[in-house]
Image (spheres, rainbow, N blue to C red):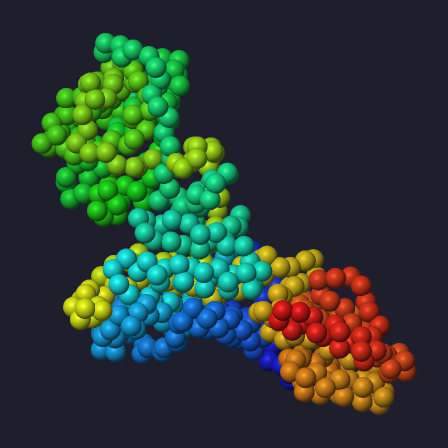
Length: 526
């Protein structure tokens, strides 16, 4: 490809709305353009990177026995059932399982976050992997995860797998601007999306359970005010938070120093359409806002759910269900028995890992791969087992956001001058820079080298523009191809070619044999 005819011009300055470096560099390097805020068009350089990533996924999934399909464009709720019906017509025997299918999709996402560039674009380029097999998909799931891991490795990208539900898995990229939070252990391999993370609560202290006593606490209608008034840590208090769904009240009991995770709460309530209970709703169940207590609540009228943090202490202070009064030395289950226990606490940095007890780290991240847990196909589908009996066909799915992967690679591989593409996803292998093109011998050497490289199977971006050396070298660094070759009047006179690897500082003067040796490094496995 001749740079003089390439669609897309490099820019000296990034767009004003671009905050992430990946957004800045991809726009400046003419990989993408933003026709509207939050929307991105892939230019030829960007298309080549995306195509290489797609080819990488094709190869890796094919190595695991996968196959590619293309489905018609359907509404989100119709695509899954249509795929199941298609597979059920074509699969009838256990010999065809597990079945791994790769599909490339394009999805519109409402309300993109402009500041996050391709990490939150309004149009998503996706690679969807569908797995079908026997109940549990025990054979298929490791194959798919390994496929993604090999793709990440080829892109020289560190991705972290995290739990997201009982069986769901996500691959995330840690980044300070990430739109979600990952809780990961500082010692073992435990990692979970924050709304699915748990902690190992300590055992309660070895102390006797003291008798309850009501105390006067004027104006102490918050945990902070109560702890300050009694000169105790907030962890020695119980917090009662009341939520309602269509008038039905739920009382959440949690240790006073912790907050309720909204995503966990939504799962417990079965909906995200909840609200903080109103005063008349509290009065109807016998609770007083700011001074509520689980003791004495009529559990036929209110659902009482306790977080496991309540088990980690003794002799708590809770409300007394009347203004300006609290109860000391409240213990579970002596003084009250929750109707249910559920993990509701929002995980914090420093909480003990539920596996090994080491401190957890909570860090922002961007999700690259979202996985859906395995389950029976809907609509129901069957295959015949070795005995000829019908068995339920299960499925699971994953979506890799190619735009986010592209942005993550650039975030990971850049310097002060531009992008440093890993060879597996670089748009071209070689950036050929020709200086002094008005001299016939230079032009002849450049054209001959351009033709030779292509004949040898290398993809080449040939800078044949009438521009200064500074402009050409700056653009080469910005675009970020692995190897830059330069010809000039000096090289033409000496019969040599200057080579510089984008990730290195040394400039090499190479004859034919030396050039062949450097080019060999671009070959896989060399």
